[in-house]
Amino acid sequence: MKVKKFGGTSVESAERIKNVGRLISECKKDIIVLSAMSGTTNSLLEISSALKNGEKKSAVELIENLNNKYADTISNLFKTEEYKEKATEALDDIFKSLKELSEKSYSLKLEKEIVAKGELMSTCLMNLHMHEEGINSVLLPALDFMKIDMHGEPDDDFIRENVAKLIDAHNDADLYITQGFICRNEEGDIDNLQRGGSDYTASIIGALSGAEEIEIWTDIDGMHNNDPRYVEGTLPVHNLHFEEAAELAYFGAKILHPTCILPAREHNVPVRLLNTMEPTAEGTLIENKLQRGSIKAVAAKDNITAIKIKSGRMLLAYGFLKKVFEIFEKYETSIDMITTSEVGVSLTIDNEKNLSKIEDELKALGTVTIDRDMVIICVVGDLEWTNKGFEAAALEALRNVPVRMISYGGSNYNISFLIKKEDKTKALRLLSYHLF
Ligand code: ADP
Ligand code: ASP
Ligand code: MG
Image (cartoon, rainbow, N blue to C red):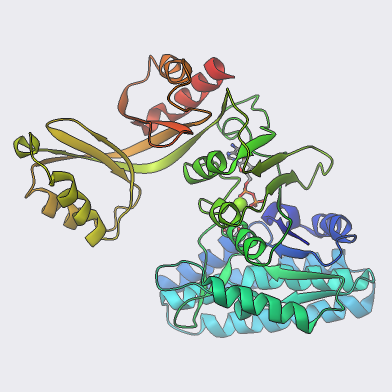
């Protein structure tokens, strides 16, 4: 059994949904995870932000526009009146509940209920399309099994047990279709796995239901060696180790959700990245094997804040770093990069929510300097320290870019540079030019 996830662009129109339908029609017993149609999650967030700003009329208009878009999709997707009616009825129910939600006053809980509608709509359309094509697909409601705990971590036992139960209850099905992204939290309320979270859904289901492989189908032929949105002429990387892929995803390669690789790696389930528009392309296979002796890819993570704590007392003192880390732990803020010297420590965070409180407490330890709008450039590959020349090549590529921090040796797989936001594109291009 495989878990196959199709992203927003793969289901963005009636034609694309039919295309996915053809790709999955032979998938006996596989679990198909779908994102919302491209643009829908953004539209739902716009609706919710209109409600937040008290612009009820504009929220209603946005819902109408979305409804019309789905009516068009239905008329292009289905061949028979019977299925057009079935689909219209099902989506009318979803839009009715969306309108009811828009009557309520805004809360974050309401926003999450609104934003969950996108995946409910796309899976409903795909399931009916498969039925019209004579395939016995069954919808597995993600809200009945996908659960996160108070830290946002998947509740593995609950998920494993309930996916198995749902599949058992429908063991005559040809294939199963479920929603990516959406889940319930520890309160039982509708929640989600953050933007781009459908990849994470697929990885969690694949890891916990003993899948032989997890496939992530998207609009590009695998993980490229640099970010194609900023660099021309990037090329697919055909093989990556779990650790390499996890670093790339965490440090900005948008093709994968930041934490998507973790469940697959933990349960040793290979992940394959494939292109819906070009299904025969090789793509990228991510598994527990390292292709030695090369730098594989570069990625960039935006919106980074660097914090420097300089202290005379760090000199010869033990326990200084512990005090620093405790402050970050207290404010539940994770640290990405860290470098130390005898007189100070620099580190980076990607979440400024509690920065002013953190800054206040750090001031008790030394002089604090903050640099905003920074970018981490992450170079990933076989960067074990005994290999010669790779870190020098990356540094040489960036010889004309001001570098605020460098981190190397934390793992065998990456070297990271902290630079200014305005140097990002230049740095990515220079790295491609010099390394590939
Ligand atoms: P989906 O909607 O299928 O989840 P995403 O838009 O989330 O697709 O991810 C695919 C996009 O990721 C590509 O179109 C590409 O622009 C972007 N991307 C960024 N970095 C990389 C990379 N290193 N390799 C491939 N794609 C990348
Ligand atoms: N639909 C969600 C989003 O747009 C989740 C996903 O596509 O993975 O972020
Ligand atoms: Mg995505």
